View 1 (cartoon, helix red, strand yellow):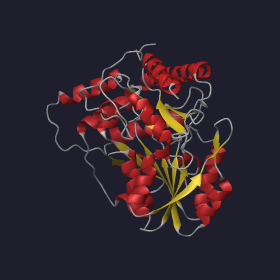
View 2 (tube, rainbow, N blue to C red):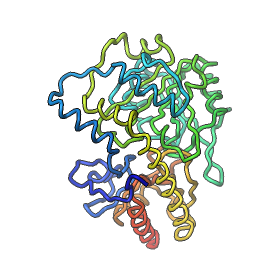
View 3 (cartoon, rainbow, N blue to C red):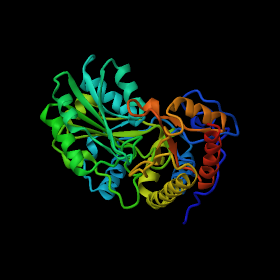
View 4 (cartoon, rainbow, N blue to C red):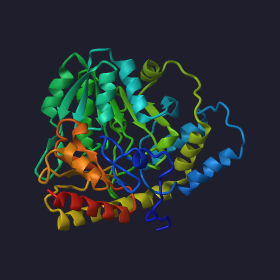
Length: 389
């Protein structure tokens, strides 16, 4: 490989949420803990992004900076055209600080207080938090998990929920965090068609779109149904591990929908270093991403083989997308919160499944976007925790 993803980078002293706050759940941690919780990567920045930021700093002034330039819009739209065959007008983009900022903006502008928003659980916790904090009603469509930890959608339940006139929006996580599904074109078309049929806005969080297994295909739902009222939220933050730069894009199906959410905005300003990083990522770092995907596939293979040999009661399926493993540890401890806290005392930080809502009990989320040697040591620590049971 051209890039060294085996390099261990000490993140202590960088104000890392993942390595210096212990992640979620109030578990015990110290400077010797190994963290597999927060969803960011422990790999060195892509060199082209590093250079783009440094070159921008050499300009010596960081004043108000316009983001809606032709160069910026083209970098985003060209990426999605090349990687996904999704062609959209760059004028239909609206830049926000993060994908969840875009999701919350859409909820606020397209629904009223008290109306329902459909989500598919278990799912990324800020989905629930965003809906409830804005005074909307959480409507849970429970994903169906089979004996092989493969998740599918209960479409009969979904149609009845979307047919309810009080439910005005559906939030889609695609690829899905934490279960790792990359939805098929048939599944996406069914979702979009049902939303369209019942006049429900579809907001798709596709932040993990680039991080699918080698050979797998992510399909933007808006590509399949370009004439529907769909809002797609994307960012290179997960793809290139630049979440700290706080920048994402909303892509609207049409100008009328954009106007409802963003207002008639002609110019936006953004962090100039974030813009530079965006350009360095989408314009010059494709080879870095391709190697990351190969390395992540190797990490998932290592994890599966290690668990099969050492902790065979943990049920686990290699996810189709994301760099997050969804592990069923219920055979050892069905209490996810207690399991995560016990792991904390054992020097390994994981994400308890309960926070992802219904269906998360007995599961943990485990981030494999880290050097393989760190995964190996973390798993040994987990094994020692389980041996105490």
